[in-house]
Length: 246
Image (cartoon, rainbow, N blue to C red; front, side):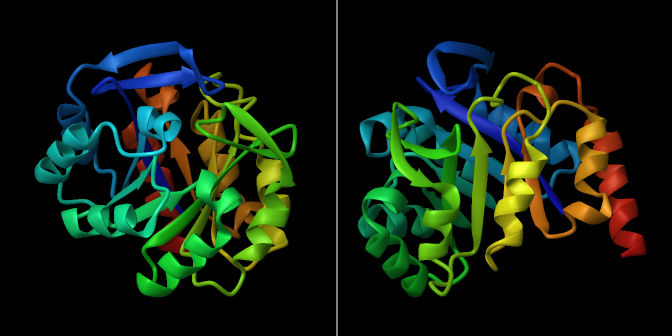
């Protein structure tokens, strides 16, 4: 189980949104590279980054901020937001991103995901963000008519490294993960699933380490890390201990 600290980029700054609403953004750090360095110093082993402006624009917008982060941390970085074609996938991987996350294009253009996953094995993840069970696209501005499971099943044999499943209703609100919905998805596909949206406290980390959550590959923590509700040292110690006895 990997705990991914999240850096969401808006206007070159590190922010957190509430329920994906760009109008409800809280700025937590003016220097995303400094935030990435802080997470590295705390002992995290994998960084989750989203170009929020890029998700709305359909192309990378906060590239400079991402590139600075890649220069200051040695841990792998997974990046989503505005990745809609193979050229953008390749460009980010060439710049040092360990894994790209394809979201909107996974709904609109499944062939792109399959081609990217085949071309770059183990380096392409799919981001599925659900609102009332249906997948949202275009930076969560639109809701499609398909479920996360329907989309995920399209990629069962495509070589996708992970599915990142976000419950939009909980994202940024510190209400706790929607573990039931995430586990239901994980139990019905063979692709590793990463939980996202609402992680609020050490209790959520304990729930992720419980036997019933054994199929999950990890979880993303955002606002809880920024406002101090989740102590990184305690969370990472729990995960280390769980690995030691596994």
